[in-house]
Each structure stands twice: as structure tokens, then as C-alpha cells.
Image (cartoon, one colour):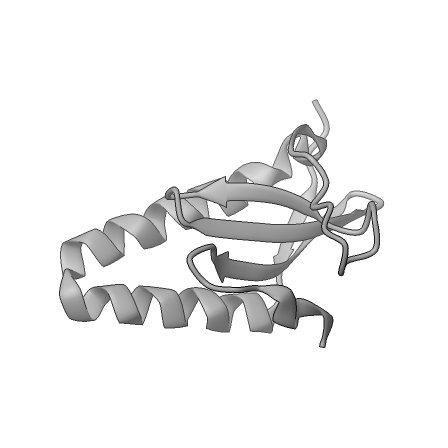
Length: 102
């Protein structure tokens, strides 16, 4: 099975950091565990990233992003180009994410 390179955008790293810092204020062990699980999901995209469906919302062009969920609350949005997976967003699903189109 061929592997893909996984590139995490600075924006996605910042988003992940913000989510983990927020959680750490309440429960540091839970925050560290959540970070590890989210990163494991992201790293797993190096194999068969097509296994996750497209993120089909009215405000995003169809077929642009795939979506993967991690830790029940986090949505990972990524694109596949050639043999590279570009992780662009790590979104807390408890928030409104229509801002993606702005």
C-alpha cells in the first residue's frame, strides 16, 4: 500500500493548539490525551486518506475537502493532491464553522 505525505498547515496547528489549551485549563490529562488522539487520526491519513467522505456543505465547493472526525468533537478537513494530504483545518464541532467561507 502506497503512503501519502501528510502536511499540516500552520492554521491547522494553531487551531489544534487553541483547542488543546482551552481543554487543558479544565483537565490537563484529558487535553494531552485528546491531542495524542487527534494527531494519531491526522497521522493515519498517510494510508488510504480517501476512506473518509467529502465534506459536503452548501458553503464549501463540493469535492474540495475530505472530513475525518477525532475525539468525538473535532473535525479534520483536508485535501488530497497527488500523493500529499494537506490538513487545512481542525475544527471544534461544537462551534459554528460557516466562517470557513469568509
